[in-house]
Length: 546
Image (cartoon, rainbow, N blue to C red):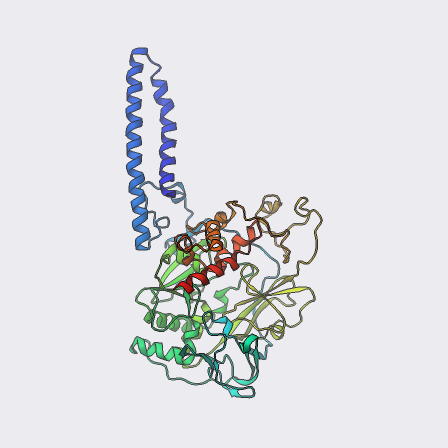
């Protein structure tokens, strides 16, 4: 429909250009004027007929492209090229002429507290594995260890009673010092006090090339490797009997203060490639790698020279680094599709497991934000203690597991989530600003032209959690569509979720979205609606419906 309107506007513009010419020609004589008028009407009729045929043809092209999973905009599947496709900026020299997918919608939020490009040794001593991190897992799994037990890294801690073949393993070796329980004796954390020198449980992995697919699946389920996978839609732990259509990995993050994966992967190139090779055995489709074409320097060769995968270059503002946006522009998720996603460090862990036979849960976490004592990169392990890793935490600080847009508020006594790459610390926004909506005296991150931010594109802010307004009526503003680079109408989708309309939710593209994809929409929302929470409610409803 949008393409049809585009064609109609082009034809209308053409008519506006030629009509004055025809009118001037008709001024020549009265007798000849009638001939010109008739000719003009014939031309207009012919143009209307041609435009109708072109609109119908364009519509069929879009339907066929959607059916086959091809992005018609990115592949220029149109009878008439658009101005944006004719004037598309060229890629950087390091892309070597490869196609670059330019994300034209979005917004970059520039904050103070960027991590310094130096990897430090983290000071965390306690690490946790949490059932809540694995969506779909029973809140009361079968715990096979007791407090005081000594475990090796990779030893089984618990498993889901509904799916006992998938084991959840210890991120570090040491002593199980605490099993935290919540309501109805649900398991919140299984906490391990780490040894000074890590001892790994040694496995005998099957050959990536010669081993059968089932052998690899059984090995990963038994050793904790299966817990590295995330299945879309719904962001759940996949079932071993359901393999994915495709697997997607974004090698960069465009969120505020996001870590640099080219720095993180340094020295781990071989493990990353082994992880890619393993993933290629687990799908009949493709392993897709999203590469960063935004900066002047090229990404790590671990990404650009990776084998056994398809590489796609992306440029543009946030959320260009979101794996959901990349999936949408490469091979969208349709009803019935199963697609897996992993982050870079999960791929490295998978590679170590298949190459060395150990579950190496080592992670490099970026501690960021204006309230961070020492912003930087810290080497630690999966599920690190927040208070121990962060060191001193100032009073009045909001601790966020992740980035400021899609991260989760957490407390000092808690632990990082299983795939966390970033921790952000900013000021709590618990103050009242007199007439803040009327007199914008204090600069702040905003997409509104009320603030002169657009005049200073490199200006950075401290940022805080103040929402600068209360929850309001959910009105149609068109703001979401300006920052979400997907062929989805998010406001209509959110209202369909709130109404519980399953057919509308599916038709409006809920399967393609995860919370991080609508986080920027939530940031710009005038109505202050909790869009990420609403979307999760909708995804859970659709999952329960089967």
